[in-house]
Amino acid sequence: KGANDYDSMREILTRRFSHGLEEVKAIQESKLQFSAGKFSNFPDLIMMDGGKGQINIALEVLRDLNINIPVCGLSIIMKNLLLIEALI
Image (cartoon, rainbow, N blue to C red; front, side, top):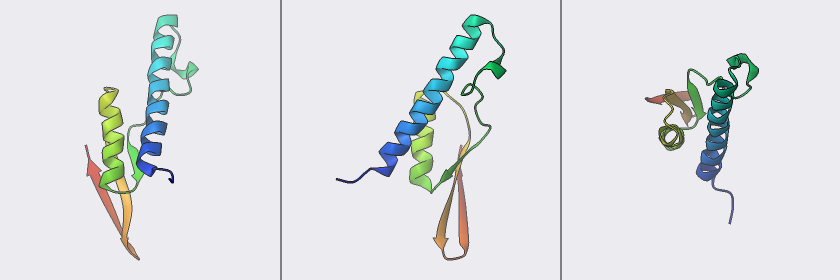
């Protein structure tokens, strides 16, 4: 059976933001500046390569981790037409 793109996306987003949350906690406990972290600086917006399915995976991960970041997706629906979807 081949790779599941949605599961792969879910895994990498969960790893990235979980690591960021752990780093934030460690920085706060050590009273360090946030610039000391690599993953603790979260983006203002997440841009997904895809449509509603990809957006919903990202929103699911963020919701599970109690992180509030807007998510939008880009998908090509016809040769020269680009669709931008946003679910916040």
